[in-house]
Length: 232
Image (cartoon, rainbow, N blue to C red; front, side, top):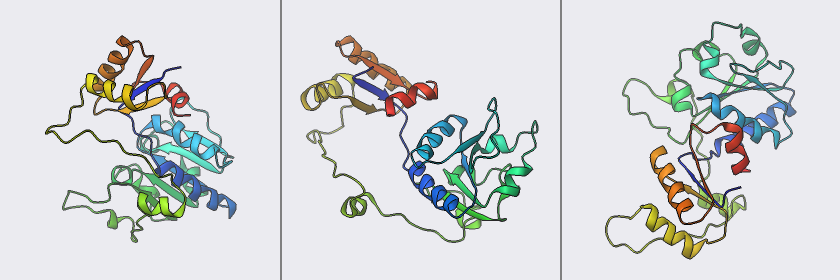
């Protein structure tokens, strides 16, 4: 195992929200289809759903269908596949949850399934730069979740402790500086370091290794089953 994981991947709270919504729908006897923008996010979503005791099926390339599962997890690319018939998904689904809906909801492959039942879009980027489209074209009622400060007050999140370098101009994000701060504030603690790109993630992990600290770079190229081990 690694003491430090350098990553350009950010965990999403959308999966927790989606799990809660799917749980409520299943409790009412309904079925949920959860659409993610990329195949590699499907397993992350399934792991979150399992924490709620939900039985999940995958509609992905190379995955065997489990049509009896109350929750189906799929990508919008899968919906556009001509290799399989997915009419059964539309016929059985009572609730569509669309992750990163500022991307997924505008997919041509998803469009035929919308406006037939309940649809809920999840996004941290509700505003569209394009003057020709709006999320309100698809989702009629915007609901804004509590911000982190409110969630802390409500007892759902822990109060974080922030450390910030002295303001001396441009922020130094070099591996040398990050290591010096980690050594000062979190030495010996299992740590995630989030970077801006795959190249920066690889460079950061390599620098820690050179200092004698076990480290691993996790990127979009890392197999999802390996990523899950670290986020657990």
